[in-house]
Amino acid sequence: MNISSKDLQKIYKDIIQKLILSGQEEIFLNTDYYWVIPDNEREYTQKEPVINNIGSLEDDWLELQKILKRDFTTALDLERFAHLLLAIAAKLKKEKIKI
Image 1 (tube, one colour):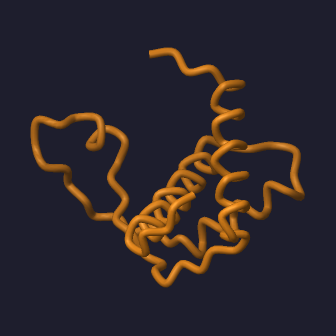
Image 2: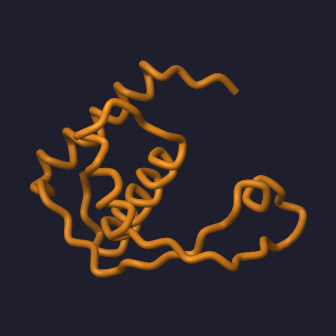
Image 3: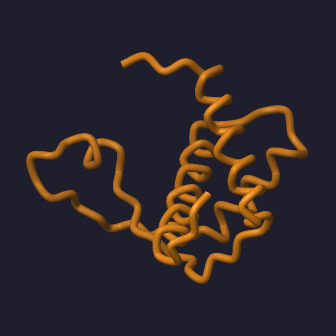
């Protein structure tokens, strides 16, 4: 599968714009910790993954804010961003908030 970075950017901007227009300019997450599934475990679906790491949304957010003050981004930043998006999506679904 090929994913266009430009299309991904357009989709992201559209989703965030709709989130803001729906009144979700600031989102409070009442959870912090989540299970981290290693890459090789996540991609292999023939058996249950071994989960022994815990991530923190608060730590992810603090680290992501540093991107605004530096000239580089890492794959880990993208992973942190994904965890935050998953948490936001879970909250919106749980509270039945439409965007």
